[in-house]
Amino acid sequence: MTTDAALNADVIGKRNEHLYFALRNPKVVIGLSIVLGLLLLGLIGPLFLSSSPTAYVGPKSEAPSADYWFGTTVHGRDVFVQFAHGLRSSYLVGFLGGGIAFVIGLTIGFTAGYRGGLTDEFLNMLTNVVLVLPALVVLIVISSYMEVRGVVTQGVIIGLFSWPWVARAVRAQTFTLRNRDYVDLARLTGKRSPQIVVREVMPNMASYLLMSMILLFGGAILFASMLDFIGLGPTNAVSLGTMMQQSMAWAAIHLGLWWWFVPPGLAITAIVGALYITNVGLDEVFNPKLREM
Image (cartoon, rainbow, N blue to C red; front, top):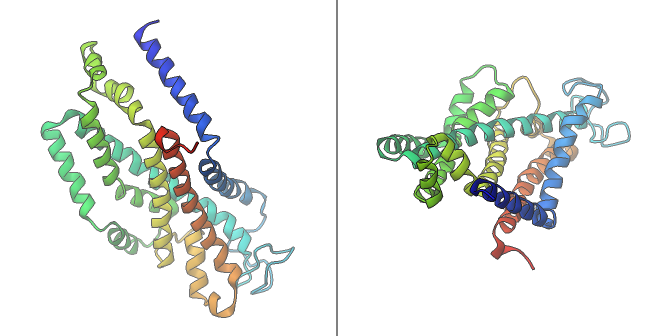
């Protein structure tokens, strides 16, 4: 068996082992079930709902019933319809914001850590500049100056300011891996730097990268919810955060309309909490010392 074939077999064996323990870890199973269940509702729900989230469909301030599962708002809008569309928007922001931050963080972290020298100094300086910026304040300022705000725009803005901690962590781990024997062997075989990073360095950080992506996804949803709650959310869409903002603006608490603000609040808490639980479970899966016997 060749060296590459042996390495591939070892990688496949580790993947199967991790999958085996992941499917038997209650934290991973419960966390992913909640996240995927709400995602499925956000993707499929709007396809079977005939009304728009901004349409006036029924009596005002109606409590949950067989006709209106989550009741209606003070304007007569169906809260369940808004909830299903809001899930889709919030997940989209999470995927966009987390994905953009993940790609930027990986690119800068791997480049700085592997090349070193002046390249590392410049990229490290750039990372520190963005890191010390108060991200939430910057997002508030940028969002407040935009007359038309969409879900995609919000996700892009969040992603552009959420990558520094990933870049620093990836850079530090790349520093420790770039001088390993297998990396030196790859250099001797004539492989280019991008190939070495992708094939030799990145697989040894796969578990950390996966957990980082989960944290970025949850962080993007939280950032978006905070912006939405203070009135800087999408102007042409409904999200879980805008549902909370509108319910507070129309005094839902004082009017006793708990069905207006409880579902989106619980959904945000459930998504972020489930992602955290999943991360803890994955840490146990990837670290044999933490696995419960």
